[in-house]
Image 1 (cartoon, helix red, strand yellow):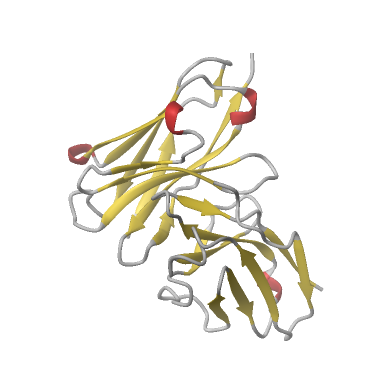
Image 2 (image 1 turned 120 degrees about the horizontal axis):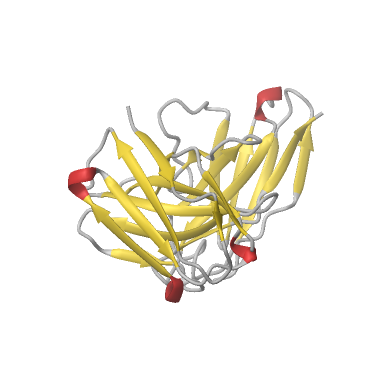
Length: 120
Length: 110
């Protein structure tokens, strides 16, 4: 059974850096064809893809947010970390991590999400 | 990368069929067979319903089907059931080696 869970602060101040951790089980990020991605959803709005890290440490970022994002993995801990710099109130959203499988070209299993509010 | 275009809402009666469109460009939907669809109930995480345009993951009802023509992908739900009422999002791989989601469609089962 695959599970993913996001953790991190629920409230950050404008200009601060957000660090979110995705802890997963049921698969390994050292397995070929596997990745973990981050997707966010502002309240009442649509999903927005942010970043993806592959089993081989290849990384992909949203072109519009690339300068603010960093994604890393710790295979031994089954964790993926996303950092987003210079947070703004428009970044208030539920942040999801999800497993990506190359042979499905999609995000198959998702975490429950974590709501991050940006406010002074 | 602009979001894919979906209708804001669609509706149908139980037992009917509905189709949700997802329009992109030749740099995303039209250029790759990597279109997926997600169902999201209120307060819940999205659930993968269709991948690679028309493939169903194990456990997803055969009432859900996907297709693509040019720059537009479609999700069809046949034999509508009350539990199908949810938000639906399309997604596509892009020429920027990134992914883009649609704006979402709210399905109401009348």
